[in-house]
Each structure stands twice: as C-alpha cells, then as structure tokens.
Image (tube, rainbow, N blue to C red; front, side, top):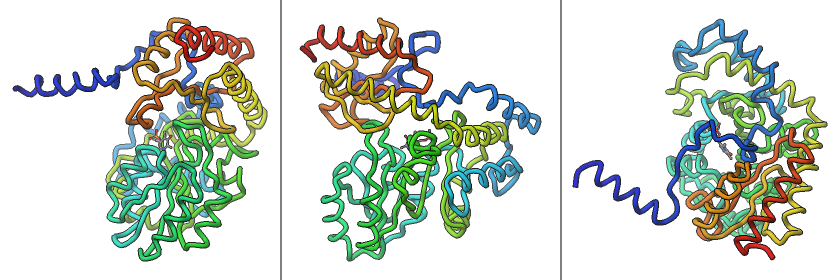
Length: 378
Ligand SMILES: *Cc1c(COP(=O)(O)O)cnc(C)c1O
C-alpha cells in the first residue's frame, strides 16, 4: 500500500465513524452561532486602527521575544494584561494553546502530580502529556472526586490542579470558590485557563477569578476570543513570569506575535473593562436561549455562560442536525468525539452580544422545527 492509499484508508475509518471534518468556506453565509468573538470586538474599528498604527513596525515580528522579536508593543500589552488580571506580571505567548503547553511542560517536575478535569481543553491535555509529572484525571467539576484524588496524592512532591475557567464544550464554570480552598487544604497549586471567561465573566470582564473573587497561582488566557485578536498569555507573580521566560519552551522557541496583534489586543482590553452593558446583554440572551431550548425538551448543558451545548447524542445525528440548521441559515457546528465523550455529540451554540431578539426567536423556531422532525423533542 502506498502512502496516499494508507492515509485514505485511515480517513475512511474516520468517515465511517461519523467523525470526518472539513473546512467550511467563508462564502457559506448564514448567521454565525459559533463565534467566540463574544463582544463583537474582532471587527471593531478601534481595534483595527490600533493594529494599523502598529503595522508601521512591519507585518511580522521577525524573531522570538528573547532574540529579535521584542517590541514596546509586546511589553505594553503585557503590562496591560497584568493590570487587567490584577497580577504582578504577565507573559505573552503566540497562542493560548502554546501558553498551556509552555506552563504545563515546564512548571510541574518529575515527582509531581497534575490533577486535571476530565473535560479540560485539548491544549491542557497535550501540556500534561509533555510534562514529566504524572497526570490524574478527576471527574468534570466533581469536587468530591477532586478531594479524594488530592488526598491520595500526598506522596507526590507537589500537586497542581489545572482547570478550564469556563469549559469550552460544556459551558460550565469551574467552581474556583471550592477548588482554591481544597488546594489550600491539600497543599496544591492552582492553574486556571480562562480562555472563554476573559471578557465575559465578572463585573469588569476579568474572568473567573473576578467572578469568584479568587486568586489562583497561574492564570492562562487567550486574546483570540473575546479580545478579538490573537495570542495567549500567562498572568501571575513576577517570579512565575521570570521562570516561564527562562523555562517555557513554547515561549523561548516561538516567533513573537506581530506588533499589530498586540496593539489590537491592547485596545480590546481597554474596551472590555467598559463593556458592562454588552456583558449584561450577553447574559440575558444566553438565558433566553437556554430556557427556550430546555422548555422545548432539549437537553442543554452548562451554566451562566454564552456557551450553550445542545446534546444530540449520536455523532451522525448531530452532523445531520447541523446540516439542517445550516439549510435554514444558521451556522452552529456539531461537536463530536474526541472533542467530547462518546454518545455526547452536540450542537454547540455560542451567543455574542450583538444578537437581536428576532435572531434569537428565529434560532429557537428552527431548533424546534428540526428537533421535532428528527424525533429529538416532542
Ligand atoms: C480556545 C482555547 C484555547 C486555545 O487558545 P488559542 O489562543 O486559540 O490557541 C486554550 N484553552 C481553552 C480552554 C480554549 O477554549
């Protein structure tokens, strides 16, 4: 069997499992109910003009931060992130994915253990795989399971708890108000990935820490979601940032993000703090959709977040549901294994602050129509 035949056969297996993925052309149109651009900042003119100003420094940064790629835009943004997250310091990475990998592969050592929520993002899972520490997975936001596993982990040198702040595929919120006291009791450090909470949760949009009034040891985030730009970051103590700058390989060996992206993100963080009204609308729209779907008989996961997962179950059925939605001008993707557990394929809706009441009514109408046609609701 030659190279392409071998790959074709492997892809055939993916297809027969209902797990084949393709890119959706930009020209498809329809209302986008999948965007993580929660506050609509990705095409805000203020971000674009900030990016344009920084573009005069060039389109690419030309090197890693430690060699030729460092500019005042990077440092200005890091100070802004630290102020926004109310920590001593912050460090920029090229993406949230690489921030997670950099932290988890450098911080916990051999002889340590990482306790990881079962539904953590793929970038956390990959970071754990690269770490020399052992990984123990606890049930999703299950505090008694976490406590049991912490108690059983006292023989390790150090314990790290790592969790999404808002879970990207479940729309649930990690209970930091319970995780942090548990960490204190069992002498563990806490790492929170606030990719979906930044800009969304808390009075000023600072994320799950503000929402709970909690201070974990390490906060990770992305500038690619509510901040409408690109890049990842870590926020924490000055010594943590100094350590990562010296040890996180995804920081050391990666070309710095372009200055224009830094400038856009900087402008976004200023706007986020003043977006209270948008966050209020986001919350109320999400609630309308969540309760609307529940009242129709759909199984809806998650909590008080703009991520609304509607459980369909079977992967092929979820793909069909998404296709029928698309025919009605609604784009919301089917999420299948391995992104979610087997049998829990779902349509993942996200709400953004600029959705009108009539768009929401339309969405609910078509969900009911398709759900009834497919015998998912009565
Ligand atoms: C999106 C996401 C990431 C990755 O962030 P990027 O900047 O897109 O690489 C990491 N963690 C979580 C929880 C995410 O949802």
